[in-house]
Length: 365
Image 1 (tube, rainbow, N blue to C red):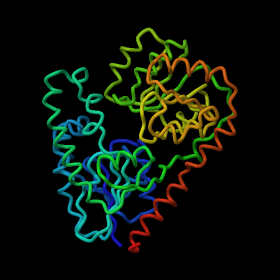
Image 2: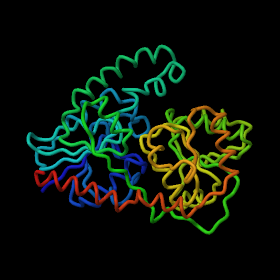
Image 3: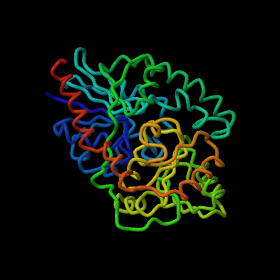
Image 4: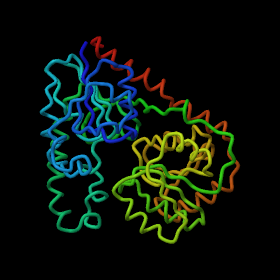
């Protein structure tokens, strides 16, 4: 059976690419289709598959500014010719779910989220305070059209799978479709406790983008008198560095997995101030035995056990997070219990569950 896997873009190993990596392991003969591929930006497991790209690959400055081409993504994803494939799997947080499978060919979509900027997070990305009043006004109808297209093409997958009950609710609300929840893969074999004493600092591991609300982490750490380390890269770095001026905040940029594991193990507490669809980094921190302070919305309420593996913060304010950080530092945590909880999100478990769903659809079930 010829299998096509469609993914939005390949520019780095984030949560979506970790899902894709397991799909590539489980379906080693599959061919990949993606809008843009930056060579060597993803794991060898992904790179070794045949990779087909769209016209975006050849447009000016697309490797760095591919998000600026968002309005043409629908046309690009629909141009992929999947006619020679017997089964389609999409890994989608933007437009991949709308790839056009041949008539009668099953299409299983692992939907990380309906695209945030077209639905409920326009202001976080394109509000007047982000891009200016005039560009925001011009972009609003563009995003409305994109949302209409997104809804109109929601029937293309024959089956939706997603990463949390939270996102299943968004799929139900925006697409009027039901989704099977399969928690995404966390490499609990690699991310494990190390024999080191935690140090007095908080850790953020995140893309530096608007909806992560990292300004709250910076302000909360300053208010709590706690040094903060931020690992990750993204377009908001310069603005966040300006906000952190004078505070003990260390921006590391991207780090290797080995260095990341060491950071998790050394940190006194991991902090997540944004609303995540699932949030792999907090689970990686828990796999290393470290407690999490997270906003009590989205995937965190499914991955953090309040009072046992971390603290959930009801108010998305710097003061509320500062109080939670102080409380977390004052508690005695059980690293073994935190680690045991994280193991239920392991990589093999994800692979087995998603493969079972795909194989059942392949067999017409």
